[in-house]
Amino acid sequence: MTRVLIDTSAWVDFLGGEKTAVSRVGELLEGGGAILCGPVAAELLSGARSTAEYAVLKELAEGLESLPDPAGVWPRVADYRFALARGGFLVGILDLVIAVTALDAAVPLLTRDRGFERIRTVVPIELDLF
Image 1 (cartoon, rainbow, N blue to C red):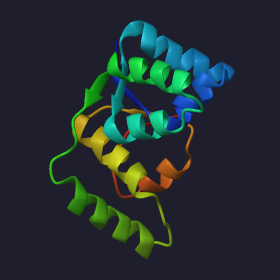
Image 2 (cartoon, one colour):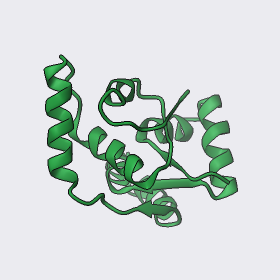
Image 3 (tube, helix red, strand yellow):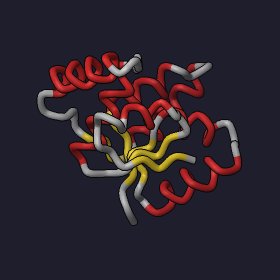
């Protein structure tokens, strides 16, 4: 199965039972293609509503492949964010780290966050928007 970096937005919808997300993320989980990165794991875990939910999410995260932080990530994020800002787009730093991570790992990013369409104008990532 193809490896796919799953963005926080897709995880949130999956965990909330949204039909399309349950299908898409569930298929990746069953096939072993679901992967994480540090920023997604941090966003996902920090959004837990209870200690019990945190424990479940942590177990899930620890059972998945996690991509390493990209080499030279911070200067690259600064360059990309500057370029986007010059074009009138302000994007979150963590979203740019997620995009650079997907780029370096040469994996698609599964997301519901349309902000990644703007990010893709400067970071040539493969997006799987749903």
